[in-house]
Structures are given as C-alpha cells and as structure tokens.
Image (cartoon, rainbow, N blue to C red; front, side, top):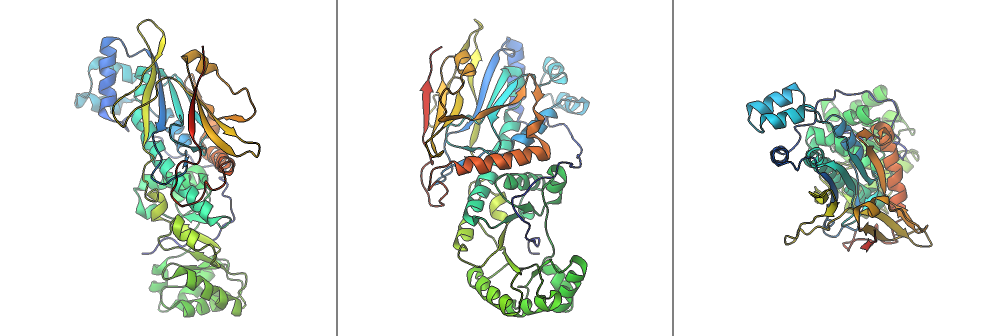
Length: 465
C-alpha cells in the first residue's frame, strides 16, 4: 500500500493547546543495566551523593552536515517526570537480582531533585555544544543517562534531517508521513521533531492527539483499486471529503487520472498527488493539463521516497507541497546524532568541585562545567559558538557582558521542578519558533546541501575565578 495521502495545509504548523492526555507509564526501566549497577557500587563506597555535573554533547556532526538541530527536550522533561520506580519495577529488579536490597530501597524513593539547563529545543548546535547540563548527585544524575541519550539522539537526528528538507523546500509546505517506516513509538516522536524543524503537518494521529500537531491524509492507491474504475473511486472520495480533497492520480495512467479527477470534482479540486515516476516532468505535464482543464487553482503534491536532495531537484517544478516518509524518520542517512552524556565535574572528598575528563583515543572530552553563547556579527549572523570554562562557581555564575553574545542555555529543571513551558503542545510551538529564529541566524551558505565543515567554529574561552 502506498503512503498516506496528504492534503496541502498552510504552514507553519501550530500545535493546539488542549491535547488529550495519554496514559503515563513509568520510564524508569528505559535504561541500561549498568546505570543501576554503578549506583549500587557508589552507594556502597560512599560516593553516590557527591555533587556532579554531566554534559550532553556531540563530538562531531554527521559527515558533510553543517549544523544539527536539538529536538526531544520537551519529551525528555515529560519522561523525567515519569521516572519513578514503582512496585512493578522494583519487584522485577529484585526477582532478576539486578541490584541489592540497599539499592532497591534507594530506587523506591528516587526523585530527581537537581537542576537541568540546556539549549532551548529547536536551537541549532555544533560539535562540542553542551546542549544539556545535568546538575545533581551522582546517584540522581547517572540514572538519567540512557533516557536522555535515547530521546535526544533520535529526535535530534530527525529534526536535523527535517531542517535540511524544509530549507530545500523554501516556502513550500512539507508533510511528514513516515509512520509505517519506523517503530510505532519512534514514529510518534519523529512527527513531533519534524514539526519543530518546520514541517507543516503529519499523517500520524497519535502525534496529533499527544502534542496537538496538525494531521492530514485523504486516500491511498488501495481506495482506487477497491473500486471498479478510477472515475468511481474519485467520485466517491469527493462525495465523502469534498472538492477540496487531494486525489491520487497515478494508479493507472496519469493523464487519464487527471482528467477523471477534474471531472469528479470540477475546477475547484483541491489537489492532485503524484507518487511515482519522473516527478519533475510529470509535474510540468500535470500543471499544464490542469490549467487547460480550467483547474488553475488545483495544487500538485508530490511524494515517492523524497529526501532533501530530491526536494531541491524539484525547486523549479510547479509543485506546491511535498510528502516525506522513510528518509526523514531515519535521519536521512544519519539516524543518530552521536550525542554522549559525560561526567565533566564532580565533588571531591574535600567537598570542592573539580573538572574530570576522558583522555582515551578519539573519545576525548573537555573537563569542567561550561556555559555557551553564540557570537553574532553586526548583521545578526552567527560567527562562532563560544564555550566558557573555568572554576565551577565562576562558570555557573557567568553571563555574557556584550551584546554580540547570545546566551544559549535556559533553565529546564530547577531543584527537581520541571518548567512545563517546554512540554506539551506549547513546548512544540516554542521549539518551532526557536528553530526558525536560530536557523535564520546561520551564516549565508550554511543551509546548502553540499558537504562541508560545521557552519561556524566552536571556541573555548577560559575565565578566572
């Protein structure tokens, strides 16, 4: 069966503000076993309650990419709120002897009570950007590692690909329709990430329900094949959905399909969809035919395994919108962002915070807490990513003193309390707006699809205490 039939909604997408709340199961076991076994060891040796700082960053962008897009922050905050070890989780851990009784007792009362700061969702990022900073005891913070990475790596990969697609589409709407090409839960997350990166709508109803995203879809080839002929299928669809529907005209012969579509709906037909063949030449032929039939306002939607390169190749075609599936939900060749969650500072036995870092080959990290800001030139274009390091207290208190530096990190969780502005439909809208603004700051040429280095350099500035 072909992909869901998209219609052509106006852009940008705006999430509704009254979603239907789904059931909220515990997220505590969405983790790796070694997070809990590290906790057990730290509880035993007395280091579990040392104050620690963890940072999330990527060492490099996917080959040829010039920027990444942070997505998943709102989902992560919702997941942290549900990170609780209830009777069912504790009973299973005990039966499998994953950890000892002392650790189980700690987990029973687990609540994250620390602070989390990070880039606003939708913000672009570069190698080394500390997109999330988790402040808390080792015991509280280490348990979140796998959950943080699984959400941010996938959602950001999808948003990064989607941003390239909406850049290539310029002002033409792009619709997400990849649910059948991904795990059912990933498909819902992907729909949310694409809207943050500028997609106009999704075919996924659960994503629409959960985050108030606009949904769209009309009919697939199966509906045409169900009927005795194309004409009767089109008449039925128009009777059910109205003349503004989108008719799929390539089940048989495209030219005859267009004739049947206009005959069924009249010149006020909303759109026709092309899902196969040479889309560039077909779109030109179909536009000419529609105009000759008097359907000058009927739009053309194209689908068929599109990615950012295919969309760019159709820039000169008389196409009105695009439907994208497989490519976007798989990150268009980069299914993960390679983000890591690293301990960068911890409290010593003397009670003083000290930087720590890995030095192993190809996996070097930079120790110490870091603040981040983006330097903008006189035209408001980004010129460099500035990371500020130094004594822990000094860095924690640092704020830009010049107007050319835009601070990038915002408070997300304070003393365990989640800032709900970043969650739900409102969070999606904030993230989409942040992405539009952030991407517009990139230097000219940064949105080209040709392979190149990161759009701006990342520099580390050390400050004194």
